[in-house]
Length: 354
Image 1: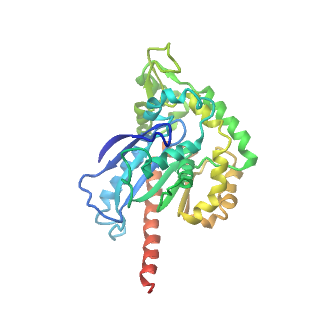
Image 2 (image 1 turned 120 degrees about the horizontal axis):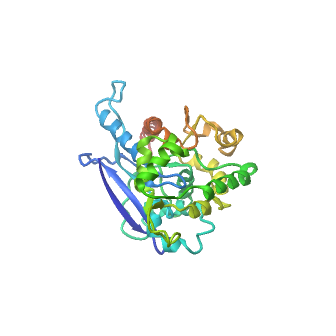
Image 3 (image 1 turned 45 degrees about the vertical axis):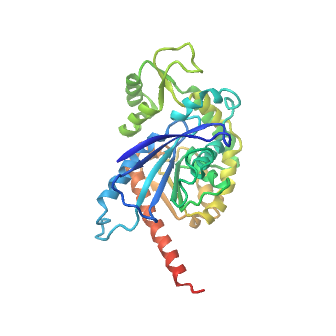
């Protein structure tokens, strides 16, 4: 698997630089109907934490070039995959550090991540103009990233997603809004954010923090890409050690956003009628179970409106971090379903005589 990092300057359409990473196989033959998968990450993390899942998808693609496991050839193809950092996360947070100090230090809108995804895919700014034109884009997001992918559909020119897959989306009804917002804000502000070294950070997280339940591959990616060396503008006097690339101040600013999840909640029933949408949760309800029921049955306009509904056994909200192999399986099945559904539509269209 090959990969390459990009810096996309979205200014002046968006006052940030956007960091993205491309993944592909050099010997992948061009196919007009191949998919381009685009991934958005959860709050407090970084784009590289999708790499374990991306590697798993590529491995299945290689294994299934001749058979899909049922003795039948795999029908769909993957052109490439991309991951995109939120402007205040990962490598983007370092590039945008100065801009984030004023106007974004108290409240940072989730919708801004959606704007960043849209700007990158639509070519607003420089360098990617028209690159994704003609691509069969599938948007995949986790938590904050799920909301960002959803909200990216509300900007113009519109992105023609072939389908969207949202994992543990951070959308919930009005009755839970304030309680959950205060809970996430408290967690962000109390989060440890300085360690003597990357090695010490890894050992602490692996053994004594909430991250000890993560798949070790994901944890290594977080320590490598989700931490940065000191000093920073938030800690100008600390010169030894590492801290979070997405500072806890910026994570807290996300938690104070009062509108983006409301927009996503109200958008859901309309979006899934326009774009085939898959939704996946972990079997462990870390937040009120009634809020999940509300999303699946009420906000959606009916659970049957989703292209698929999946549950990963033993996983909680951070399903991508704890159960990446299961996430790969869910995405793989969804890709098969998308291809079958699109093929049926195309077949029906081909029968129409004008």
